[in-house]
Image (cartoon, rainbow, N blue to C red):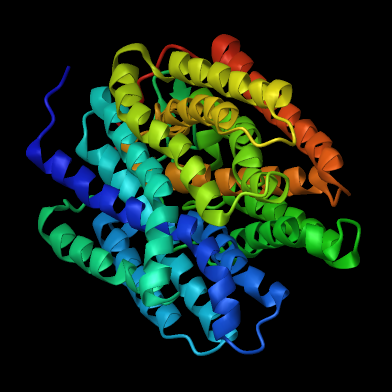
Length: 480
């Protein structure tokens, strides 16, 4: 196995600090919403929801552009720009005097977040030899799991001690430290965007020489199209799934994304190279992310509501019980990454899917309207193991055969699809739960959701046991 340089480990450290900061922000923002509503006069529940939704929509809309920019103009440059914008947005959010200002600041944070993710992961993959990619991705994913584990507790302490503004200000020193250290230790990486080719022949059109000019038509088609679909998903429950506003979002988004795909197939330097979809591991890895989102996130987000509404637990009790799963994921993910370097991603994803199915079926068979910490912990440990062997391994499975010059573009495409998958899974879960009357009806609704989640894990089990390619193809050097 190839030796990993000191520079690669330093790159992993800086990128992991950034992903910890962003992941922690996502987990603690929900705790601050009640305090924000009290502090900012005239804040309605609908407006408050946009503190979360604005971030999700802007990130999803800009990922493809950020990936293209990182591959074209330098991953270090784009990553550090993203850190600076995230820090600036955090300062603005903490200083907000109105809900409108806070929503705008969250959108600015999202611009920075959209730049950090594809550029950071591309820096990481470029720094490590291919034989050690899964170790790097596993450790990087574990840091996100740690953020999810400590985020609720840390957020509660910050809010109680310093108020809701602290959940934004805490990002600033972290981002500045990563900026300063990153300037010294991160290597710049720019590679020519030649057509993607494999040992089996061309995966993209030969003879096209990409230019440095971004596809000015493709950018708004992709950004507005993806943004419209995400908007329809996150607002569907509020607006109504059959209302004109929701249907218009889905229809317009689908048309714009279709136009973007048509445009990308003909542009010499597309925002996203559709020929990447001819790489089976990339295509099936993304499909696996959809199944994982249905299995994991459709459980993760609604479950606290069940615990608090049906069992009557406090937010603190729920948060403490809930932190066990992310902590298990944090412990499992690095070991899974090291093991994946030896045996591949598929066996680990298969094992994780089995754990996820077992945890969800355990919930269906054992959970009642009577509180039981022991029964809940069995499920959260099993699902935590599924996340530890699933989330980062699915990233590795999708990016396994991607040529180095396409790392950021492929990461951005994969993350955009994953954002859509997560939003879809959560929306479907809440639509299935509805507004049941009484604890027994609520339990029945959640049981239905948990069965659907188990079905998502079952699909992933089948996909990575029988369909995902076990043998890696080696892309040929595509440099001129």
